[in-house]
Image 1 (tube, chains in turn yellow, blue):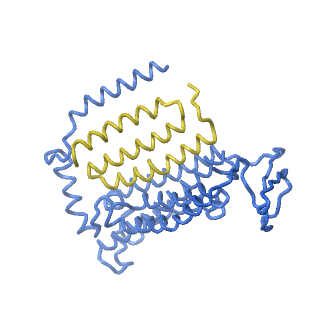
Image 2 (cartoon, chains in turn yellow, orange; image 1 turned 30 degrees about the vertical axis):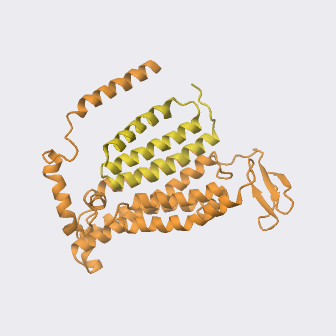
Image 3 (cartoon, chains in turn cyan, blue; image 1 turned 135 degrees about the vertical axis):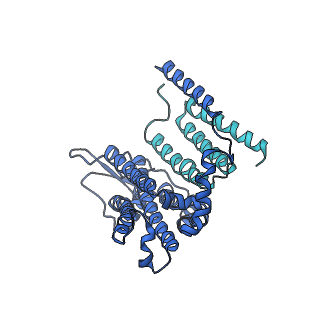
Length: 81
Length: 277
């Protein structure tokens, strides 16, 4: 895979990881975490681990985002700290 | 406490970075696993298990014991979510059911013992925080559901030849049910896959996996040695292993699907499984 795309994905992974734990809006954090999972999925593909990438795309970017949004919807949208 | 957590994270990061240089490079032919283990799987999986995608062969056959307990862990995760989140109905708690008169749009609130019979077609039960739903979104989401399910079955059945397998297929099946829950309401999901059925299905998936392993003992093989079914299927030993992997993957898919749908139902309805998202 092209090196520039790889570097862009790695930078996005780090940015999304830091953003998802610092953001105050929990719904936004859930969405950013979904983006993080999808970037990780692309990284797995670039390392030729297609089975892991498939799992990451379905579980990480799909179901866990829905579960987190459901939890935010049923609790509170703002963090306490 | 926050400073301590930050210090711990930074320390762990420095340790990780220090040890990362000791790892073999990606695809290094002289590293320890590339010398013995990887060639054995890459060259041996097709003649031994008739499975071109050797990731599936490793997960389902060579490391079948790991995958069996992984399935059990998924089932246990669903059960612990059930025991922690499920709110059983207490007596004396006032409950209100909301019904919408379809032709006029008038909403009736009924106190707990009173209900409108579900057979009356001009009233529909709605959630407390119901908002008018867009018909286009709902219709398109329900239109997508059968296609997602067919693709999920393809992923399960074709896991021997392409990326995929029981786990991914089960997640896709669960996603189709969750899509129904998101676009319609939780009661539609509940009518398609009730809570009791879901938990029984999850248990049945684990039992299918462990039972396939246990039955191999009676055919004269080891635990989880699907090659012992060769006489039962009337096929060669590698073909019997391929069939065994397929049965096991179906068990994994059942458990994952039912568990994820159960967790979604519990989380989205505050544990009451009455009114969802």
